[in-house]
Length: 58
Image 1: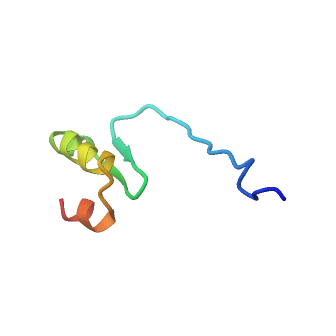
Image 2: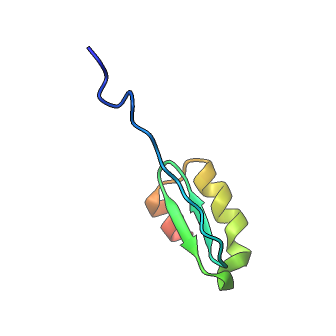
């Protein structure tokens, strides 16, 4: 018996621009250029597995 997710592929793409995108297992954040100073802290939170509520509160 075959696992139905065995052949599942994830497709990602990139389009250059000024906005910042942070993608994690439990949350994703898109920030405008005016929020550049917050990117590093949010990136660390999301990378450490922070969920949606915790990330939104930050």
